Length: 345
Image (cartoon, rainbow, N blue to C red; front, side, top):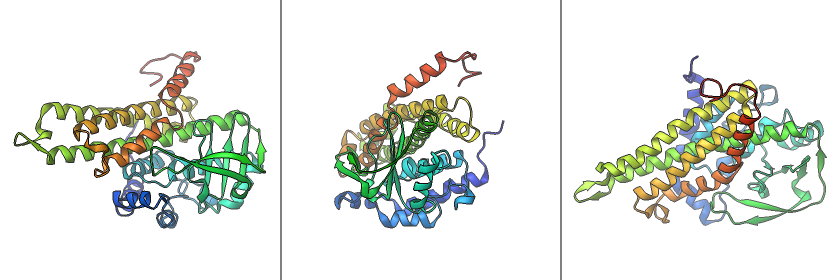
């Protein structure tokens, strides 16, 4: 088997990386916080113009039809940049779902969606608070038994406080009118959960990598006893632990992405495993990065806290570690197949 990324996959990754390096800087994120508008409409429009937001739509629907592995590589870069706009956990997710939504809901979404150029938010029991709902044209809502689509004018929303100022969360107070269906709900719910877990996992890997890069630069610059603190063995080991955790988590993400593309029978297990591993890596990155910064990382002056806040929020979104462990355990314990390194993981 060949696990090397293709040239096209790397080009997509590098293209989004180049764009975000220029357009999504810590300064621009801070400016959004200060004016209480983290959703940057100009940056969103540029993502549309580049074809990023519609990239995982089928070609016949105006997209590029890129595969899940390529998409995951792009999402990692969005995590690395701390992109406030919910391209991964909302738009890419909706793009993937259109083909499997009940027909009446899919038609309603597509009437407003315009091939990904309009923002549609999504809420689910594992992510119950829609992101940037005031900036959306409508909301796809999955509850315990059915799927609904509600246009913006038919829903009453209330903004709630988030640990991450880049994430504008809303609580649904009431719904005046909706299009609903329980057709194939079990399959749809599983598909949404798996994709939400995978997108979040990829974001967490990017965030973890950003935190360790910031910490590595800081410990080389900060001196103590006449030496950079990065030269001390304890600091080296602390950051090396994070690097190891990231490297162990990445294959789980790419395997889950491939499972989705291949419609693997174990895709729910693989996506849960990816989210679990990436949450662990991001949690360690937060902890050790604060230590490397001497607790200064959480202060407003340092950029580190921008990415830590997002990581903490994403760890709980689309299923925390307990939920993902439960999915893994139930999947493995109910399987009649052989378990172990050669078969399961």
